[in-house]
Amino acid sequence: MNSLVAYDDSDSDTEDGRHPNMPEAVKAASIHLLQHQPESDTTLHPTSLAPLVGSSSFGKDFSQTDRYPAHSSNPRNTGLRNSTMDASVLPPQKRPEPSGGGVVKPYVPKRLRQEQSNMAAEIGSDTPVTPDDLISRSSRSIYRVSDYLGPHLPLKYSSSGIPKKVIFHLTEHAGPVNGVQWCPVKQCSHLLLSASMDGTCKVWDAVDSGKALCTISCHRAAVRDAQWSLCGRKILTGGFDSFLHLTDVETGKDLFTAKNDCKISAVRFHPCDSNMFICGGFSPAITAYDIRLGKVIHVYRAAVQQHFDLLFLPDGKEFLSTTDCVSRDSADRTIIAWDFATTAKISNQIFHERYTCPSLALHPKDSVFAAQTNGNYIVLFSTQRPYKMNKKRRFEGHKVEGFAVGCGFSPDGSIIVTGSSEGNVMFYNYHTSKIIKTLPSHGSACVGIHYHSVMPSLLAACYWDGSIQIWE
Image (cartoon, rainbow, N blue to C red; front, side):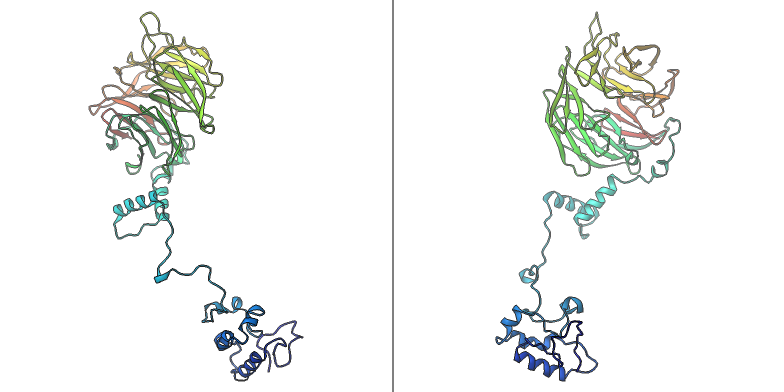
């Protein structure tokens, strides 16, 4: 009778298919089984040898030499792993199942469990929520491409327009909103960052839904300023609790924390390296930090009481600061230019009019920056030394009256926009300094505005009553 399995090197096998080293009991059993095997069945079922394998007469020798009979195929090739074999023949299980028929559940961190429970409460308690669902939902809700902005992203930016109506009115902050900023990454520019006196920062979907996507609550006092990193994944915040925090938007993790010597009123990333930033506030000193080193790398000192705003010039080698230094006889040190690398004071004789400047803005194309003054006007300066003031153009008609009213340029540089203590939003022609349009107030001071980088007429404005309006 032919062997069940044909081997190329089967010279050592006998003609009846028995192995010469096989014990006599197994030889007799295999001969008996082969003689009674049906012609149509050419596979030896493993259960037929189970009593022999389990017997004490040869189980020890067989288990140490050939684990499977010579004429049976390897279970890895014939699928015998799914058949009912004796425990001594099957390879050992990697991990036994727990007693009672339970299922081993993966460990889920406490933070993820809390977020899962919150999500389950939103979408229904009967719907199971997994960590993968949580991550995918968070990714879709924050760093997705906006349905509204998507078709406009490949297009070249056209000339800036004037918004006409309010599309969203955001009111979730419990205190005055100090500033707003669109995400600098165009693919994620539907995200709007806001910093509030209620001690929180929020990231909003301010284009599609008008809803808050996440809240940063790491400060114990008012958040005076906040800024996106260049990659759009991190947010730098400074507050009246004297702390600096760098937060990962997607995970909410605090990546960097530092305690400053004073209350912080302004933070700015270096324009060429997001690992470095400067901060200033209720102190004569401005400090520069390196996140990689986790410490202060430069200190810039001036004979002043407070710094209002900071502005890096385009190459990042120099920056400007505005201070509260003003007197009856002189207005030097109102705007100071600094060398970033050497901490040297380049000039403090830039603005000689007796008004402080609560905010600064850089023109996107020309070598020009604008300064908002408490004299109820905006003035232009050159970014080149000696930072000469343009006396021919002055943008008047709005009121500041002690509020830290912000100003800015449209992305094409043709429009200057500013808030006002009366709550109006004013648009000026950059070349003629004439008022183009005024958006009406809703009763509270407008202290911050920011043009969108993709949509020509999309604008965000924040107010002292804690509200944010999106105009288009």
